[in-house]
Image (cartoon, rainbow, N blue to C red; front, side):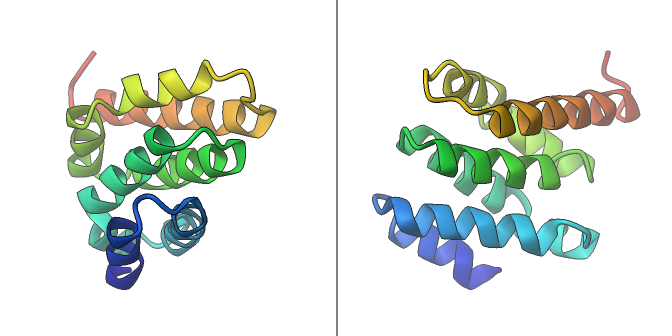
Length: 124
């Protein structure tokens, strides 16, 4: 996970690296809470940077899927997402004319996880 995150930071202007990095992070953290915690806030920030850095439907899909896999697991990751203006960044991406159905589905999943995490943390 550290190598993926480092590559995403070093190659922030290369869409292919961002796409592969988001895909790898999403797959790594899909069902492993310990991996999600290891990826942590760095992964949240990397996925948000990927979404905001490019207008690419495949990249937006991978990034929002990664975020949906990460956010909502622990309060720390949800807080990191909110502090990084995650909702605003993802909402802006959803306004792109090339927004896909898969992106919208993953966005709805992400929002649901954020809402559930907020309730768990006592936020209305």
